[in-house]
Length: 312
Image (cartoon, rainbow, N blue to C red; front, top):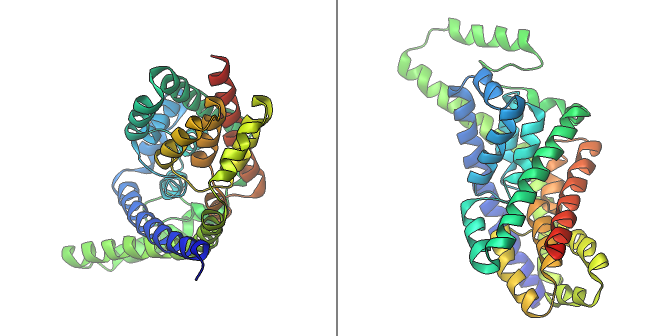
């Protein structure tokens, strides 16, 4: 077995196992939160101008990568939270958390860290606002809104009949509790199974890129003008699967080899904010117009932040 094939296979096994475990755990935790916290409360927290602040704060506190942030996003969609804040969370979560900010601070200094953080937050809020204003929520796939008892769905009457039928059986408290937890586990498992094929394809693509794209491919970018290299770095980043925390050590090496700070930040944002595996998984959630809008926002955020760092 070649070194490249071995590297790709190891990446696939470890990444798929990690994502599968994270997906199931996060999905279950979100299901429990949605079950215990009334949807009206979630809608109230994530609505209006305050909702963007809550969404960005939630994104900044959850140490998820671009793929593992999707279960939380699904939970917010099912809870009927406002669409703009949901998208602000989706943009912010992979790019900001205390660990990443601390790593940026130690590696690049206070100035770059502040520029990076401010641009990510502001552009996430602005993007979420305009996506909601232009009603991109209509491009969420309808089956994501189906839910368990006690949650509003697209088929309220049928859900109500099923829930009332279940309640009329009057099981014992222990049995009822056991059935309730089992139902949450079954719902979580069904959700994972529906995403598993997309996850396998996405991680498979990421594994091929990881195993067969040499690191010096990034180093070859340093010969271009900043005007070209920043968008080019963003395009390259979108097709990778890396966490921001993983990208920082790579970025340090690239800067040492002469790559500009702006292009490295552009590569970091695009690589951590979106990835080909994530986009393949997102196809299970969104129709193409929202997919393209998401990719454009991540690309634009990477380019704008990169140019800002070069100018400032």
